[in-house]
Amino acid sequence: MQDIIMPQPGSIIWTILVFVTLFFVLKKYAWGPIVNALQAREDGIKKDIEDAKSAHQSAEELLEKYKKQLDDARKEAQQLISKANARADALHEARKKEVETEAQAILEKAKSEIELERQKAAQELRNDVVEIAIVAAGKVIGQALQAEDHRDLIQREIDGLN
Image (tube, rainbow, N blue to C red):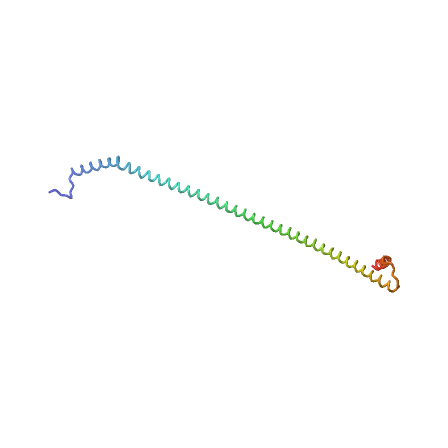
């Protein structure tokens, strides 16, 4: 029986020959496609990583752009609110002045109407005083003077007192 632990020179040569042949066959038909597939996969992963970086960069740029637009929109909204408040204040002041002017006009009209009524009352009082004076003078003199003469006389005296 042959010793299993001790290799035979013929089997060493056959083993080396089979190994070298198998190596060249595997290199030509298996390792090439496997290496090409791995290289293609590596290239695909690199491309995906580059695309992801590019997409991330684009997303960052868009985010900054949208933040700027949002800030601009907020500023514009604040300006519009400020303008609206200023316009409302101006309208309020204009309406306030208009109301004050109307109130002043009503007050002036009321004063003039009161003055006119006072003058009418004074004139009526004068006329009543004239009538009373005519009646009293007629009784004192005992004769009836013409009412128009007495009125003129008394009117001149009253105007002289004013």
